[in-house]
Image (cartoon, rainbow, N blue to C red; front, side, top):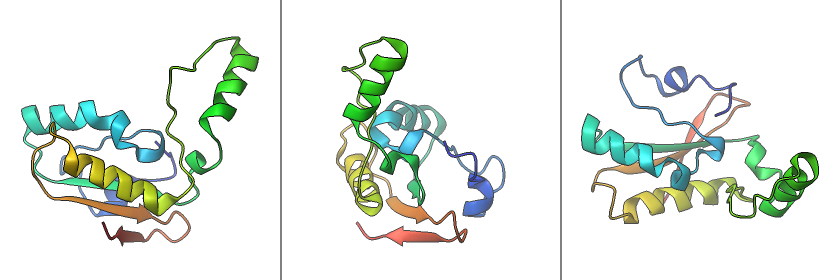
Length: 127
């Protein structure tokens, strides 16, 4: 979701080389519907999970954001999981494992990385 990251350039891809699913925090549970469609209808046979440093998802909790929305918008969003995290690498591990363990995802290579916005480097996360 982060506008600072040109995913195709960062991964050395050309337009059309990959299906890119972007969301806040790169969270797999939020992207599962799109992953299933990509695999079942469009032939995707490899998945790469990329989270990034300086991610806003590290800066809040569900309770904090729910309270803010309740105060600002007078709406109750207790039923929404915003999926923040406290450990960047662990969030990648968790998401890779979720994909590998999902009965809705084909048995394909799934790897995880952290994109360092400060350097432009992509670092593989061992899972």
